[in-house]
Figure 1 (tube, rainbow, N blue to C red):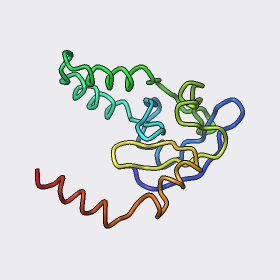
Figure 2: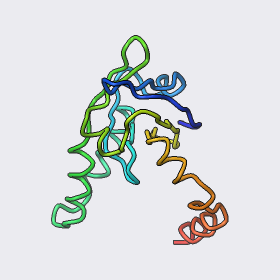
Figure 3: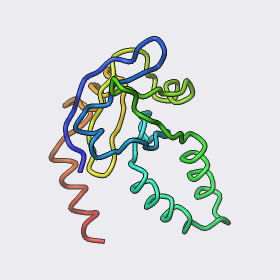
Figure 4: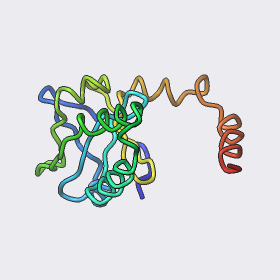
Amino acid sequence: MFIGEYQHNIDAKGRLIIPSKFREDLGEKFIVTKGLDNCLFVYSLEEWANLESKLKTLPLTNKDARAFVRFFFSGATECEVDKQGRILIPANLREHAGLVKDVSVIGVSTRVEIWDRERWNKYNSDDNISADEIAAKMEFLGNK
């Protein structure tokens, strides 16, 4: 399980250090793809296979399902960690997430997310997130 928040920088070549605690669970190779909310999603190969299986069940006849699958898979790339614990994030993924220098790497249960730090701080601010509102919405979701 991935938990926690870490602050790192992307270098001029687009390399980012993956926190050692995350590297242990991600393995030697893993998948980085476009995420929702203008961040990147990072999956272990095992979790990616689980997600792929679920996405394969979406109806090909549904336009929104096709668009979501395209979005998710077209941005995906397999990454390997170098000897310094870094990965190279391709330019198209850095552009999608607005990654230039300061980055937040966060654990979100079955995946890791990579955010532009300023965007993460804004998203994670009290002005944007109310724990009470989220709790109320989660209660509603649980009753379905």
